[in-house]
Image (cartoon, rainbow, N blue to C red; front, top):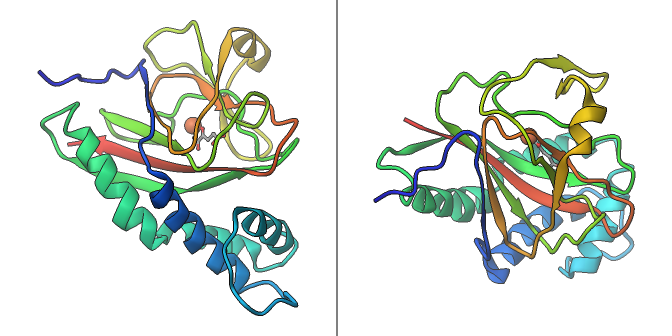
Length: 219
Ligand SMILES: O=C(O)CCC(=O)C(=O)O
Ligand SMILES: [Fe+2]
């Protein structure tokens, strides 16, 4: 029997990506960043700390939006993450999945890019689709994990577009009253149904938060 996932469900899968998978992903990202900063140190060398400091440096560069956009096409997403998502999806359905979008999302302390509460269905014209959200490092409390609603119906709610252009649920303050914060260990995956209200957890501490987000639909 397949463990079908419903549109109002969330499922956590621990250790979905291994430390070595993640190192490959972060190295690819770091190299893209490194090539675009004016660094005195000409030699490329990956360490997690250097990755984070080079990122903060490259954010000041006007090429940053282009670099960020290129993360959608990371080879490691295609070669490591997508095949693993296809594989795990077979546990939930006999139907094949189609990747709708993939990318990397970064949240810094008190970041304006924080996502308010929303459901994922807005603008996605697929009956059966899911968000695959993967932590690229451990994310303890108050470090920009995810908040998910504890009390909601399995249906679409009305959304409005906020100043940043994101579709968000009306009455954010009410939604935010009944949420649980999800924390992550390196490589953990959270699968979210299209009607699960969710958003970015407050980030008041720690280095920038990195997650890989893939949206996929069953045919
Ligand atoms: O990564 C996050 O903090 C939230 C992202 C999200 O909900 C989305 O991309 O739809
Ligand atoms: Fe979302």
